[in-house]
Image (tube, rainbow, N blue to C red):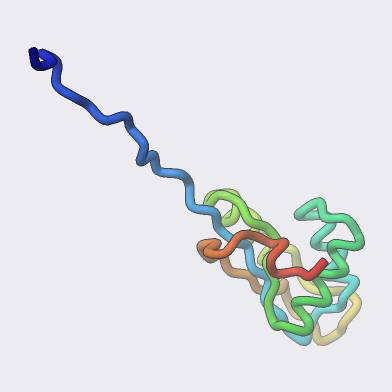
Length: 114
């Protein structure tokens, strides 16, 4: 005898939030000290991690600071843009630049060598 109830498949395709990277972009108008200070204040990174971020952005031109959900990534990117000039350099007239992008291959640990 056939089952009188329709067969249903369990819901397996749930949409997971896509992780987003907050990417800091390099320029010549901010010191390592500025980047280290900003990473500690805005992201809560340790001094050692902040220094590695400063090294990577300097050598590679960009670095992932954080991988998170889109709304949080947007907030953190806006905080970078609002952080202000580097008072240590006369040529610094504003904040560093950042972008957010979908995280295709993991997170910030992939970008900053340990």
